[in-house]
Image 1 (cartoon, rainbow, N blue to C red):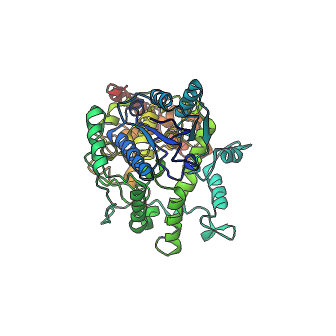
Image 2: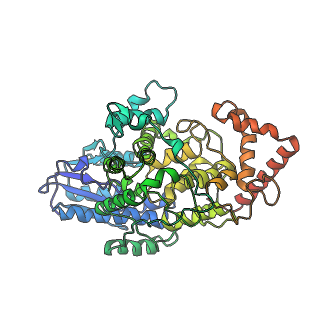
Length: 514
């Protein structure tokens, strides 16, 4: 194979034709380098949907590049175990003068590629990933001198910087945030009839990937029987159009609601496409804003949706790169319990967890409240080591890239960072789940009870969490009301709750995944 001048490294979450790394691509002398490596599927026990999502999207992107007449050096699964061996093989063969890439989405991968390039003595140019609306340098400037970081203030700056939902320098509608108009439950009637999300039938490439994953990763959790994700830029735009037309208008009102056997509800299904860079966040935000200006969706729904992208998505990336690599090891609440085995099977008597986990293993998806206030909440109350929770979230979701998953899990969900991401631990009893879903209907546990055979484990562990951490939580003003409620418990009630919580941990710890 002829030598190349520049070898452009494209990772599995960088499938962007407008990438800065491709700006000056010369088809006569340059080549794009891509590699499927098994370690990326096994360093955490990745589910079949997550593995398939990344690989089929990569192979489709390869074909897009080749369709442009570009040379692509592509290592398929099995050729090399890791990035180091794959890149060494290509450098030995092609003798490039330079390696070029945009910044990786994972700290360890970035360090690994920099180390390999240094060992091979080939210059590596690392470019800013302009997919994002805020650079890491801009976030560092925002964070400089602040005792506490809060997404709301960052979000307002991003609105002003980009002009989204702004008029004459002020937020449209006269306020920045419309949370009070959102986050309702469905009530007893349920979500009613809705247009189902657009599905994308696996083509020949995806079918080949599904077969490969089922064979090579047969022992990994999850199933590919329902795999229908958008895996190209064209499909991602169709998915965006479908969301804007059929679900955006009700998104805000019901964004926190949950319902048995209803995985999608009014959510967008766009996070995986954005995180793999098949879809530009500017395009998504602009489409949502246009829907409001055209009178097709209320401002509260549109603002709530845009805040998740322009606010949270950009904010968590800033947090990740500001605090890594030490962030990964944070454990502010000193939680050390193992992760219960049912997280990998869904086999539990708790109906909410059974539904959310079974759905996750089936589709590689759960919406943000299922993640935060069902699977995440139980792990927090149970006292699971936040790093183990992080590894599970990274393994099971098709949209999981470490820069976005880690702060949301370790920080927001588990409060492992001690308040960097969230101003308080997001803890609640089973009554929250009862209010926001129908999960408790027909469940063998009663969310109103904290002790006894019918006691909901969420409720038992909630009160135990407050009791265990009362001295720390008393110092947090936002937890004052919850901590004050402990005064309602006499000594016998406290002892009964703590004993039942202890028995729960013993029972669930007997079947833990290691």
